[in-house]
Length: 348
Image 1 (cartoon, rainbow, N blue to C red):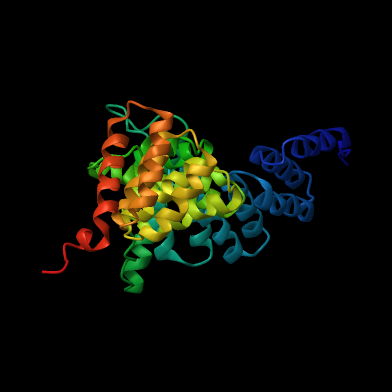
Image 2: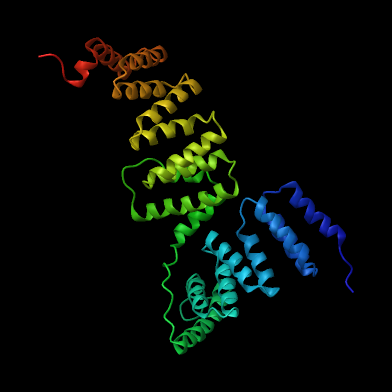
């Protein structure tokens, strides 16, 4: 009988404890426990990883295989499907999901999933099949797909209508943003138009950030990035919600506050824009743009005296700011004329 390697187990557990957000620690320990025949402990470790790790696709994959192998294909399929949705470009995730679906008798689902897996194989070399790795494995799945198609035809069942697999570039963007959420800010640089490919990349970034926000609801930066991306996709309600979550987590997050001001302006909610803009001038009294923006918001609401105060603060920061000087002069003139003149009315 093979002697249990307690030193190896202690080393793997120490890796998990030293960096609890690193998913590889949980998957390595879980796989080792599985090979040692300690199924219950392997599942316990992987379940803990789902609540702690920053990226959980590999953990879902391994847990799905364990559950399916233990005689619970439904639970196994759920975890494998989660892994494939998080990293749609991973051949082995789709392959194993398709195999488990087939083993559970879901032939139509299995065929569709295995087709997607085969589509991920590397391009064949001239005059021969793909060489090595995923290409060879994908070739071995082709006959399973054909068997499944024949079985489906014999059952008289219609193929499932599934959305086409995501483009590889978008899948890659999704994985990159999942590893480094700051990349989303580069993708979401404000522009007037985006190409279809760029919009697909933004949607991929949104998916990655939404998962990260669900896994780590206390990370203000993730909600901030999600808000930026949602804004560029025209999803204003979602963008506002994410910006407000970032501010709820970190009330001194000036960049999120400025973003909220812009979103409320675009969304036609000037009162909320004013509230957040006042907060911004308190957080960053040295930001010239904050005072200019507050002055413009006050002028739009006919609050010319408050607008003049905002422009004066801007001029105190930069005496040569022409925008602040023009705004101050216009606000003072409007204040002298009174609200009736601003409305364009008056006694005949």
